[in-house]
Length: 235
Ligand code: URA
Image (cartoon, rainbow, N blue to C red; front, side):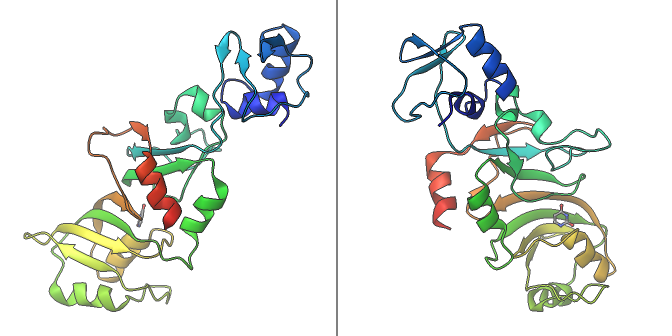
């Protein structure tokens, strides 16, 4: 791997900054000053320091965030709205992370963020039907007949036939948990719209086997544990 690419992958600098650091003699490879930014190193065995700090190479990063309201699930926004990536420390922002799937701006809760494109792609593939669970609040009570309708696959206003969705209503009926096996645009809001109801709050609490860590306040994040990652990889 090229030295500058390695430094970028470690999240400490851009490629340009890495090249500048090499010129400033601020990078060593196995204790010797790096010759050039494009020299090749072995990311598994060579010891690289950047400005005195030994770098640890981590190829893939998986983060879970409790997405707050008003933050968008994208890497950047043309209108300058804050994104989930903006809430991460600079070091992670430099690693080319992206959200694994989308949540609406006003939806809160579990957002997975990674740089492992292939696995993210697999988990999001419409063919895989990965379960996603949301806690919802609706404008009016949801009836047993509507729950049965959703279980059988609702038809949306535009004619799209949803896959069966499981709803567990709270005792009061104006909220509960809904499990989707797909992820169409505004899907839950449109499903409730098709039942002449309206979603007033939506929070994702589970994606595949990964549950939102209740210790995370809105906007907070943590790395996935090895066990969580293994569950995702096995999925
Ligand atoms: N369904 C919605 O309507 N919105 C979301 O953010 C996720 C699922």
